[in-house]
Amino acid sequence: MKGIRAYEVGGPSVLKYEEMPEPTPAAGEAVVSIRNIGVNYTDVSSRKGTNPPAAFPWTPGREASGEVIAVGEGVTEVAVGDRVAYAMHTGSYAEQQAVPAWLLVRIPDTMDFDLGAATLLQCMTAHFLVNDIIPLQAGQSALVHAGAGGMGLLLIQMLKRMGLHVYTTVSTDDKAALASNAGADDVILYTRQDFEEEIRRMTNGEGVKIIYDAVGATTFEKGLRILGRRGCMCLYGQAGGPVGQVDSAALRNGSLYLTRPSLGDFTATRPELLKRAEECLDWVQSGRVRLNVTLNLPLAEAAEAHRRLEGRETTGKILLTP
Image (cartoon, rainbow, N blue to C red; front, side, top):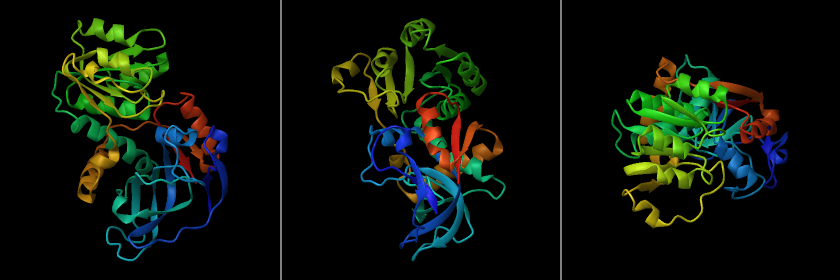
């Protein structure tokens, strides 16, 4: 079969499209014939060495959809022929992958594979960020960085469903329009405006209840300064570079909270995974949450997908198709 491998960290060019051995399922695993693959910034972070792979050669990818074509000993969660999607298992940039069966989630027969591949990782991440970090109530305010990306658009929609006032930052007028259409109340163009000053002005100095920051180095310290009393900094990524050592004294002014959450800790058991995944799939299938799949490239062009994502040339969700 064909797939993507890297033999070192580096730029997009380290991703090689080449022949790979077909997988066979071990006990507790199922082999999925992959139809669509979700591209996420965590793939970029690993490829360039921010969160380097544990070993090489390395196949990127943490999300895909497809059909089960073989199962290993003891598998009861799925059967051959099931239409499934999964997240949080590395190696999906390939035509087939052996996956722990407990991670596989059946998708509705009426759902296209591309929508199935686009849903789980980002939608489940947005789901736990909005519902399980701190209690949020209608009328409170949130700041979402990178509001025109796949995660940003989902966070905006889910926060608005809960009745929060949503501020967001984007880089261009076109991205501002996307964030506004998703429901953002106030959009800040960080290329022209200082988001710290704008939030202070728009909140009359009170700050926001929670900040969702996947950027990191260039936004973190400013964000701490615009959190309201007992506000929460939710640092769930570091696309702009890692945050350095944090002085706990910075949290004292306002009794602030800081968390660095990961989806794996919020889908740690199969019941929790299924509850979160099935709710997300239902929301997407019913249209209560809209996914914006804006780019679908052949698997052979994975390097181009990374180049565009890393260069901030994309909005919404990116897919690869074997």
